[in-house]
Length: 162
Image (cartoon, rainbow, N blue to C red; front, top):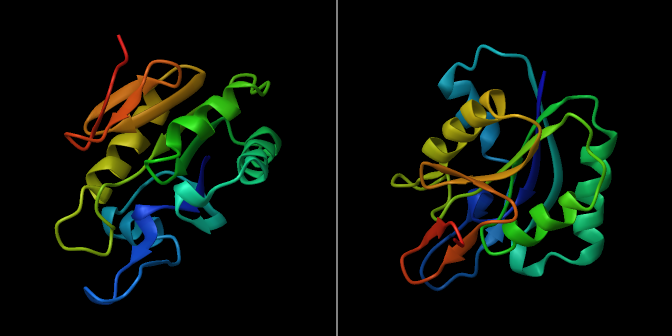
């Protein structure tokens, strides 16, 4: 069983027009997983609907608590890219046993025609099944350890620190 926790972020953002502010909507992985015809058993749980810049320590604790309590050993968390590393580091402070946790996001909302969301999600689903226990970030076709990754704002990609 694979469990998806959704926290919002760009993955789930809704833009109405150029004059409007965004809002974070329902988890977009549900239609993406149906479209992908995923053949493994999974569950989708929406925890938050926030931009990751608005996430608090309490929000990260909620995510951590739910991951710890989750019966599944394979967990994918959709997350905003700006706060993804901080949440991964908060998770690293927990005792997760044999769990493999992969955080994934998108630079463009899944609702947009040209988005990296579906590719990133598919890559994360593969990664969580192939990686050993630990906490990872999966973005831009790469997998990073939670303690060796940063978002490069200049190029709009994640990269290893060393």
